[in-house]
Each structure stands twice: as C-alpha cells, then as structure tokens.
Length: 511
Image: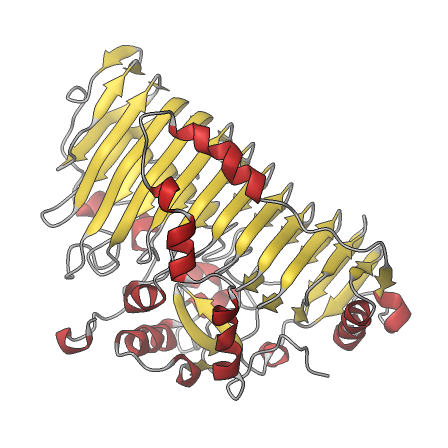
C-alpha cells in the first residue's frame, strides 16, 4: 500500500502544487515577517512573545491505534512496516489520533506520517529501522545538504501534511554504525574502506546538477548513490511536534524540518555520533521552538539552514523566527550553528538559557557561509548561556568555509548580539574573518565573561564590533584589546575540513 503523502517521480509536478496551497511560500513568508525583519529601537527580545504565541503544538483526537492491533510483532525480528502503515491509514480514516507503539522492540522500514497523526512511542518502546537501503525506495522528494532531489526516504517522513507529531518516552533507533550507513560518508573513521562505494561522486554530481538547473524530478539518487537518508524529515508541513523521544544511531541529520511552519521540538534526547549527525536542522522554516533538548552529537547540535548555492537561491525561503531555550549541548561541532547551507538567508534567531560543555564541543555560536552561498544572516541573539569549555571559539564567523571567497555571491552577517554568556575555557573568545565583498558588521558582546582563553580574539575585517562590560581572563576587554592574528590554515581544526567541497559551477550556469 502506498502512503497518500508518498511523492515519486511521476507525481512530482502534481505534488509541487502544495506550494500554491499556502504551505510556505517565499512571498508569504516575506510579507508575514516584514515587521520582524526591521529592527526598532526597542529590545529585540520583545519580539519573542509574539513569535511564541504563533507556535502552537497540534492537538489530536483522543483515539489510539496500537500497531499490534494491525499485525506488528515485538522482538525486533519481524518487520512491521505494513502493520504500522495500516495503523496510520486507519487513524486517518477515523479522523486522526495516536498511532501507538507499545513497550518492546519493533522493526520497521520508512514511516510516512499523514495529517492528524501522532506517532506515539510508549515508555519502553523502541522503533528500530531496517538496515537495507532498498527498503527506503521508491524515491521521495527530499532535501539533501540543502539541495532538492529524489532520493531514499527519510526514516520518518511527511510531505505536505498538517498536524503531525512524534511523541512519547520511547526510542527511535536508526541502527546506523561503522558497518551500516556511516561508511557511505567515505571516511575511514566511520568504517569506509578503500575500494568500497561512498557519497563522494554522487554528492558532487548532485551539486553540479543543481548548479546547472537540472529539474528536481530528474535528480534521481537511489540504488548505488550512497546519499544517506535523514532520520526525521517533515517537508512542507504545518503544525509539527516532536516531543519526548530519544533518537539513537542516525545515518546523518536527525531532525530536519524543511519548508515547514509552526514547529515544536521539545524535550528530545539525541545521542548519535556518526558523520554529519546534526541534532536539529530547521531549513527554510518559519516559527520554530526548540526547547529542553539534550544534544550529544557527531556534528552540530543545532544547525539552522536555508538551502545551498543555486538551489537555495531558486527556492529562496529563509529560516526565520527561531527560539532555542533551555537546551543542553553535551557534544558536537557547534552548539548553535547557522549554515553552511544558508543561501536563502536567516533572520530572527533567539537563543537563551542553554548549557554547553565538552572538550569536543568546538564552538558555542558559529556562522558558516562563503561566496558561493551568499545570503543575509541577520538578527541573531544569544543570552544567558553557560559554556564550560569549547575547543575552539565562543563565537565563530567562518566565511572561508568550503569554497571560501571563491564565488560571486556576497555573504552578509550582521546584527548579532551575545549577552551574559560565560565560558571557562576556549582557544579564542571570538574568531571572525571577513574578506573584500563580504560583510561582518554590528557584532555586540555585552556583559560576557570569557575565562581560560588561550590565544585571544580574531576580528579581521569586522565592522562595528562593540564590547560592553566584557572581561577576558579576568581583565576588562574592549573591541580592540586581546586581538591576535588568525591562525595559519595548517592549524585549522579537523572539522573545518570534514566537508568535501562540491565543484564550482561554470560561470555560464550561475544564476
């Protein structure tokens, strides 16, 4: 049985009409947030109550559809994909409710959610996902590293739906490890061996197709492509809730809402240390709340995105109005990262009352952009954040990421404030580098205490940097004190080189 929200090649053009139904349109987004995009003389944080007032978790009818009623068998040996799909269909036919996974271990292939369905995992329940790539075919419309394509279905997927949820105290286990899914990354530390397939060639081919404007329905990456599926991906959905569950062993990005509106991610625990194992990546989304979550990840804990290069400019939808609070970042590359797939821009991001502490956690707040992405990243505010230690810098603005300055598009980072952020140990306090035809401006550091800073600050080409009430290693700091030269490229952290740049498009096909 095929889920009604399954999108295949034949249905692609028809399914794209969801955009016309109001499920996140660029013009609608821009008009709806015009007032938020303009800074007033008041405190930017005064906007947060209005944003939160729009973020309302969906409500479901009080009807339960246990998957065992439809043939699911506990134990982890019997594949329950059809039984779970039948439970979802019955729930939809009844007008919505909860599809319940009871205590026990249940094996499944992809789960495609529909409107008014809450996939609920009871305490002691584990939903484990099969390791056979063919189980995640036929292809669906997905966004992979910021580029649309037809590829393996995410483990839990919804397209064009309204009122969908994943809740409960149970566990989602992707069963990825050094023998399954992770080796496709192409690096020996994740199980790849010379002579075995990896994502390198298909990834470069996908990026080139996007630069050349190949229609999305022709960008088919299925068997033999080694482009790993995301774990959870609601696509063009409204009113999304992910709450309470624990996520383990993901192939790559764990929670990846795309072109969604009204998203709540609450009290989720993520423990997955594979390659590109970002915790939560809202991409081209509006009105997002991430709160009370614990991130112990192999990549960025939270990474805000809006599309890559030509494909990001084609769709041209920013991520905006994101509130992140009361989260714990135990491990990962960045606590909160903006980029690198950010060509659609980002604005109005508010981070508060989070804890970050790990010798492996590299940066508290990081911006990643370059001259092939472009885009405006603005109005980002962090306050009341406690950082034990990070291995690199407290605030990083990296415009030399991947293609770096090699490209015609102007990356802009402006209006960023860190207030009441304390740290105990880092190499740098700030590490920011602009180059001609880029902009880093309006950076404010207020009432912050950075202790254990080994080297100092880097602020190359930054305009309008302001310090107010800042101490570094117990001494009063100004925007011009504690400045040191940038480190040589040979000293860059390994994570800066983990991503393999895609080939630049010929000038003739650039938009």
